Image 1 (cartoon, one colour):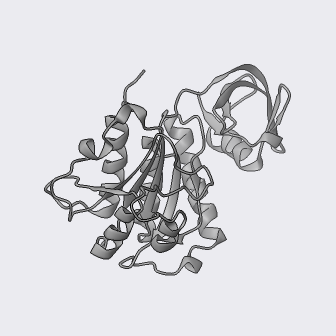
Image 2 (cartoon, rainbow, N blue to C red):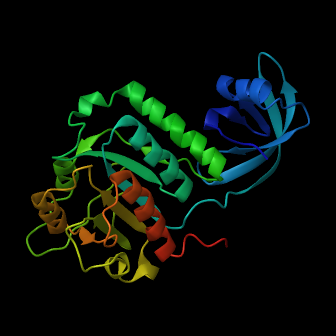
Image 3 (cartoon, rainbow, N blue to C red):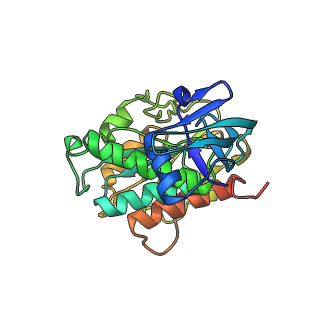
Length: 266
């Protein structure tokens, strides 16, 4: 069954009005007809089975048949702090990260990032990224739409919650949800040779929010890792082989969710 994310203003009681882009896809690409049933997702964890009532050149609308809880979301909220990459690589991370189960993407500018200016990430690029995430979420059966924030420097991310000397602190998410009780912040680093992901996770049954930091093509500078660890971020190794950053992002996110029991079918 085809899946479409909708905004609240598209749902009017039992009636769903699909937007122009969705209507075009339904009419011209998918060739859907009245009577066909699709799934509409509100991005908040609910899905609606909708029977199309009108499919015309001007609009597509349908009636809600059933409402149920979407089941495609991990219980653990994973935020990926991904260092900015070249366009095709970064977009690949967004697509695959969405499929795996990342809940939020934060583009991060580090000292070795090829893209160093946050102004280079304008509204048009953010809108393109959101489209990529939305399409991947629909394809992969996600129940909620992952978010992406504006680009931010690693220093600004770490300064978001200063850590008093001797007091452990975790980095909050830019969305405002923050990382509190049951949270964990991890950083994949080739300079860490002994601490595995499983060891870094510790008491996995208590983790509900997790931040994962992935560095740029040239890797993090040692000073950046030291600053992160001073704010409660734990460095870990992804193994003896050096992975490309886009590979590390996908492998790291998948392994985190696997270790937390989020890759099982049930």
